[in-house]
Length: 274
Image (cartoon, rainbow, N blue to C red):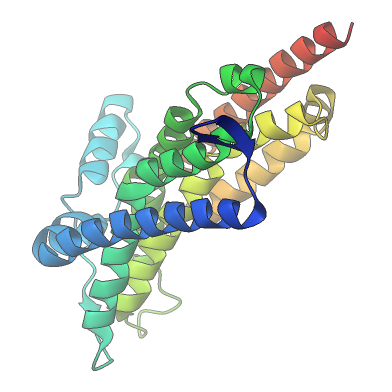
């Protein structure tokens, strides 16, 4: 990377790179901390209206699915949304859950700014052509991550909570779900799905550096479909095929978009080589 000075530009030293990176990390931590304070302060909104909402029978996803089921004459879409009651068995359990959830909320909300800061750090080391080809990268990466989080929260999480929260091996065994278990499942699933939705970005990068080709992705399409169905089955471990397809179809669409992006990049690279 180069650094602007009064006499022009010069190559940055290793320690200057570290100093720049330290500044990026500090600013990212400050952004997360500020949002953490806000999220921590509004405890009722954070938990009652957001994190714990998928356990309630009136959650928007359950209502929409039931209306869709009635429209399609499919009763299976009206899920058994028996309200799940949570318990706390640790002295500091509720406080730690509050802290952890607020930190994760800070990271999710601040993610676009963090991506932008990282982009500012990387950008000086790119060539003009690379900068042109990666225009809008911050918007795409942030948008995909937030889309994945929202997809998980409004679809994957409610289906998972509904099934696992009401699952019983025997009527003599009553589910007593801890607060930590519930919040951990919701936040972990949402973060993982946010990362899964970054798949097109990974494909674009691997294709550009020559590791991945569209022919390889097309060759193993059947294997990917099986993996997607397994993921959908784990998220919605229900014999209802329609619920599984609701999760599997968007994931498969994401894969096909990645294939098309890979083809486009591979074709451009071939044309430039010729």
